[in-house]
Image: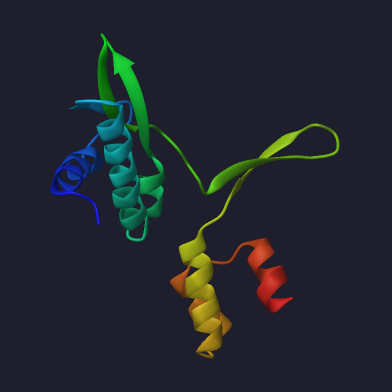
Amino acid sequence: MSSEIAQVWFEEAKKLSVGQALFVRVADKKEQTSLANEFEEERKLFSQIEPVHASQIFINKTLKERKQYVVLERKYRAPYTAFLRDANGLFSKINIDPERRRILTLMLKDGKPREEIEETLNGLTDEEIGEFFG
């Protein structure tokens, strides 16, 4: 269980815009490591609710002007986007949506007709049609 200090500062970190950072001053290296570990626990809990947002919060230890800090920084990150390089060296963007896949799988399990699934998901991709209806 993390400390109240870690909980309070992590709540502030959730409000950061991309590119902003919080520098939390600590007394020594031991406290720096301990607080960084507590922030990691907070991020782990948060990732169960908001995985993309949690993945954008980076936790680092730093020394600035001979003082030690734990830094909470929000950086742009799109964990559900990647680029595929084909045999010719050309790149194409790929997006995955785990929530969409979950909805599609559950609707199939519940025996919903394809038309209802398409309506709910605003259509199906060629990959989804091939995988689930092919």
